[in-house]
Image (cartoon, rainbow, N blue to C red; front, side, top):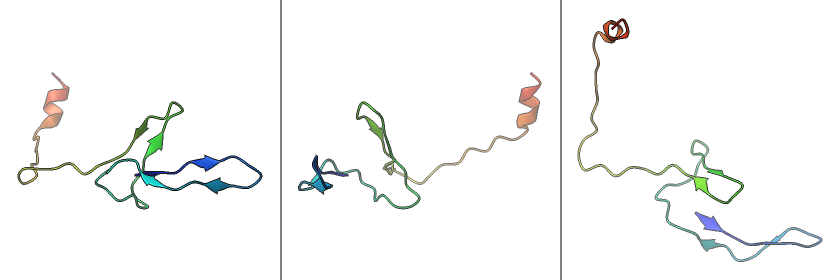
Amino acid sequence: MMVAPVLAGARFETGQPKVLFDSRTTIGFNDRFDVSADGRFLIPIKAERSGPPSITVISNWTAAINK
């Protein structure tokens, strides 16, 4: 993630961009991030796994609804 200052004036200008932090992801068309009015933001990052991914299967889940 990078940041660059925006210079106010008669035309749009930016200052020199610099690295804000390493987000460990590349922002593409399918990746999203959002910035709030106070400057905080959410950005998806890839989780580091120590083993193979797990899966949970719940059978007969409709029986639990009636309890």
